[in-house]
Length: 88
Image (cartoon, rainbow, N blue to C red; front, side):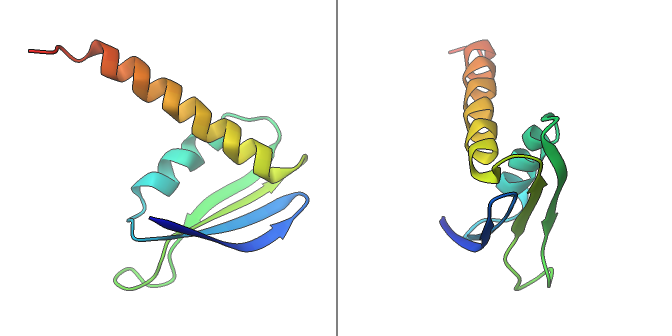
């Protein structure tokens, strides 16, 4: 997976994901939606077959730290889920 920053403004960020479908950006979007500092978040894909998904964030604070916090939250959620799966 490769990320490309398309737009990097203090309160907005657009990240393009290469080599993945919408699932990872959608997970990040879901976590970002929990933040009161996020005004708008969406995953867009210009063409369903060949387009690359883009995560679009507009916030009241700096957007990058919010994305990093969302990813850390997903890591915690996945670790908790992993602990609930029986080993055998």
